[in-house]
Image (spheres, rainbow, N blue to C red):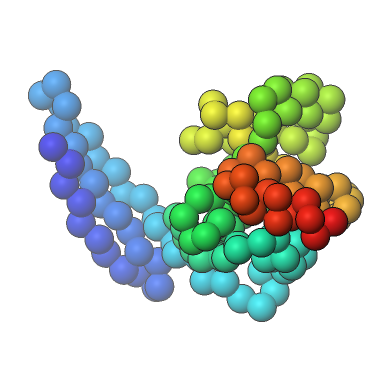
Length: 159
């Protein structure tokens, strides 16, 4: 059983949670800061690239900018210090084997992201020297992995 109580202190929401498992009670007081997008959050180049793809939109998901196809399927999540990992970057859908290959080749730029890495998604750091043409290609590849065939054809016809 999980019990949660929220407390706001100086614009930071603390989530107090208590759970009982196997007769042992655990307690946690974790700060939960909601992401508020600004005009200069560092993701503007990503927005420009992602929103230029057919039938894409952006909305917050788990507190960060996320890009969807037809407001349903996610193809890119933006991350900024997710759970204190210090990474400013993207989690993107990737084809079979792409994650393993890129992480092995350039571990300082690419990584296996939490939650979605086991499904082959790729973590891309934006807090290193960024090649925006490469990022555009990565986002297009992510889009192609998730988009329906009709939208992929539309993208192909536009090129």
